[in-house]
Amino acid sequence: MIFWRHRPVLGRKLTLCLLQVEIVEGCRLPVLRKNQEHEDEWPLAEILSVKEVSSRKLFYVHYIDFNKRLDEWVTGDRLDMKKLQFPKKEAKTPTKNGLPGSRPSSPEREVKRKVETVPLATQVPPATPVPSLPSSAEASQASVFPAVRETTTFKAREDHEPISSLTTNGTARRLIPPQPGRKRKANCGGTDEMIKVLQYNNPQSASVFLPPPEDSQDSSDGIPTAPRMTGSLVSDRSHDDIVTRMKNIECIELGRHRLKPWYFSPYPQELTALPILYLCEFCLKYLKSLKCLQRHLTKCNLRHPPGNEIYRKGTISFFEIDGRKNKTYSQNLCLLAKCFLDHKTLYYDTDPFLFYVMTEYDSKGFHIVGYFSKEKESTEDYNVACILTLPPYQRRGYGKLLIEFSYELSKVEGKTGTPEKPLSDLGLLSYRSYWSQTILEILMDLKPDNGERPQITINEISEITSVKKEDVISTLQYLNLINYYKGQYILTLSEDIVEGHERAMQKRHLRIDPKCLHFTPKDWSKRGKW
Image (cartoon, rainbow, N blue to C red; front, side, top):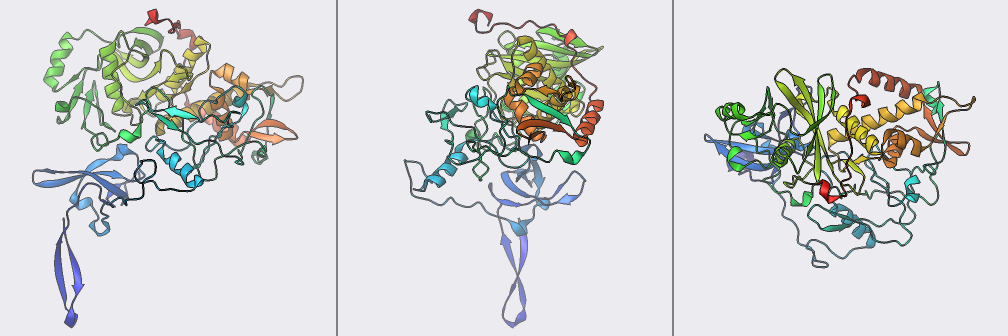
């Protein structure tokens, strides 16, 4: 890249110095892009790769503080060379315990360093639901669902054993031990404690907040607590490399839709150079050309996903697919899903999973809309491992329908469930919205008992909805409903909350009808069932 720089010399004359600057991987500089209002903006971006096509250089950029799905190839005329930042060499520091880059430090600095080693999902908002608690006694401690960058730690066990989590590569990471003296912002008694529900006419009435108990703990002093990282498909960000950080598929044709992938997916390398990757929309087999696809369709007998149809209402159907019995389909589904899920690791061993595929029916067959997977046996009470609505069907209520269906299955199984963490940014928004609407629906349907205000416990809400107690508490606090009034905990529903909920429910046309569900849960603890 060439630019001119003016340099003053003696005699007040200006000479032009021609500088040749080579942009390398790791450089940072502003890059021109269009925002949602189609206005020009210059966000800072990092150069991930450089290639030359037809004697023209192209640069693959990642916009700092933007989601990776916005990464793209750009031409040199969109780069602001005046603010070019070259990659900085890492300073060598004294080693400690054989780890490069660490130096002897105070306990406080050591705690902060340990926090940074826990991998977080890239670009997932910090307001992730708080994971399950170590014991039932501690389940009464309220978890915070914050709107700003702060999370909550839980009360340590009496023996102060180190808490560790397993990453997907089998290595254990030590999480931060709770520090004495930290206060939690809210603590709503026991989950069996009766909570009165008030519905005020004045929106300003819900202004009383819970006082922090003396024995509570909080991590709002600037040291964040990492989300739970023990899910079966959780990605270990430490293994990211330059290959997996870049999209490798230009376009996917799936039935009548053409999809532009958001993230890397490990399709065979010889297919990544193609302008379009063709998929059979019924068996999800990938093919290199339209002619190959047409020939495949003459031999493919499927017109719906393999497996059992366990739900049908109108044009919406759900199919249950065993990852062991339909291994090829399950692997192809995971490859497709990985194009739109960045926070999960793809495994080719699909045996431990069940896949629930939602379809729309027409005269040509059952077309895939989205899916979710779940473990046959989950020690963490997970009822969803991965969940995805394909881009052509997003913002139409299908995501919430998938979530509702997962909880209907949990109701039939007689369990409470929660999704694997971390959630993607879009998944977090969908779950937060579903939890809020479901819990508010129950609270607003409560009737006064003998003239007294209606009462309900956290456990009762959890049993009715099959939503795990920690998710119920975090949602109530996210909505700012739990308040402390005259020595007891109350839920205050202001007019703004009620009106907002009613507007949201009017827009929610797609709902699961339990009468249309034909599902018999299996005891997967018996290996013969596999």
